[in-house]
Length: 185
Image 1 (tube, one colour):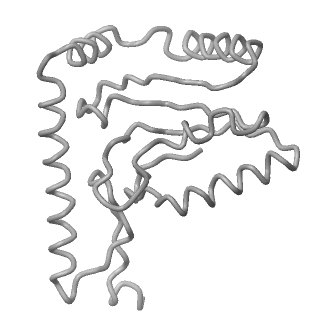
Image 2 (cartoon, rainbow, N blue to C red; image 1 turned 180 degrees about the vertical axis):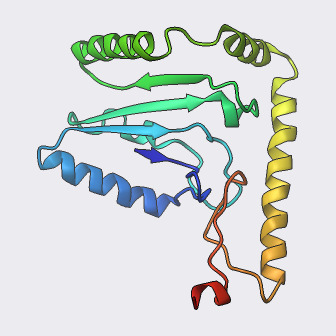
């Protein structure tokens, strides 16, 4: 399972790192391993620094018959509607039989676990996507998250006693290094 920006670190790989990820997946597929690659794209679009700007889903689609990309795209973080828990699933395969099996399994999973999705959440998401102000409002929220991430990095790098931080480029999550006093214990 690949999720970028990663939760909890907030990290998204660079193009060169994506090439490495794809290379490892191809090696495994060439070795005869069937790989359902689940891509959690619930934070897609929150790329504020030098990282890939597209989902690996597109790069993996059709790349190898043993690689089955499955993308979960959530409106929760991407559209700034925390708590609504609406996800869109996408599958890529050249086989109609695989699509039919995936559709049946997904329907069974939904019926067997949650019965039905929240109509209210779906309706709110649908209306927001249809709004003429959607892109403008989304851009404003995106800029707020970006400013917050930039400010956190600025504060941490200015304070000589502060912990360092692991690379993050999304703004939602970040992880700090242990402070010197904490790492000595």
